[in-house]
Structures are given as structure tokens and as C-alpha cells.
Length: 178
Image (cartoon, rainbow, N blue to C red):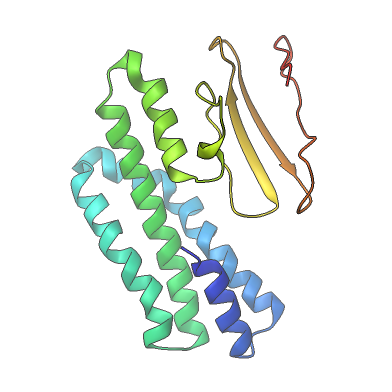
């Protein structure tokens, strides 16, 4: 949604130091990291409807907050709120997909969910048997399920901007010919 970029630029315009901007950006992940397990237990206990509605309502509120009340502390609150709302939404939607899928359909349904949450990779041709996630930065994380369903590989790497990705690696026992 662009909130990380917008909050960073707003904080810099307000005279924030690079360290203050970095601390603000860490709030997008800090709250989810510390509250993720509790949020998952909460969703397990109350179901998905309430948490999804709360996250969906909270997200536009926290996105609009820095514009309505410009200030560095407001931006900190917005970063934490946006991170928390995204976490609650993702936990809820993953719970709904898992709960609403027959065991034999879960792999495909979670694959569709992953592809719907990220745009760059769902436009790739011939990616029907891959679960890939991509973030809009130079840092990339990938989860790859082999076409025969036997191997699951998680990779993390950094790729330079505008460079061909040459980070392909093989899981022991499973050779990727690409």
C-alpha cells in the first residue's frame, strides 16, 4: 500500500534522523513479530470473521492517521498499527484458507493465496506448481515446492536492482534444471 515509503518520506520531511526513520520502519515488523503467536491463538479462539473485519477497518484508519495528524509520533503509531493490522489480516485469511480447504486441496489453495498476495510472481508463465513469495524490495525470500511435491526449499537472498537473478540453488537430493 505504499505506507512504508510514505511514512519514511513524511518523517524525513519532519526532520527525523535516519535512525528515527529506521526505528519507525522496524515497527512494521516488530509488533507482528512479538504478537504473531498471540494473534494466531486469538484467531483460533474467536474465528476469522471478527479479526478480519477489525484488521480491514484498522488498516485505512492507520494509513490515514499521519495525514490527519502530521507528526513523528503519529507516524510511529501508524507504522505499528499498519504492521499489526496486516498481521491480523494475514493470520485470519490463512486460517480461513486452511479451515475451508479439504486436506487434499490445501496445497493448491495456499498456493492461490500466496499468488494473490503478491503481484510480480503471479504473472510468471509455467509457475503452476510453485509457491513463491516476493517482497517489493531488493531482498527476496522464496518458498519453492518441487513439481513432484517431494521437496520444499526456502531461500533468502539479496539481488541487485535491474540484475538478472542468478541465485538459483538446489535442495540436496532435488536438482532444479532451471
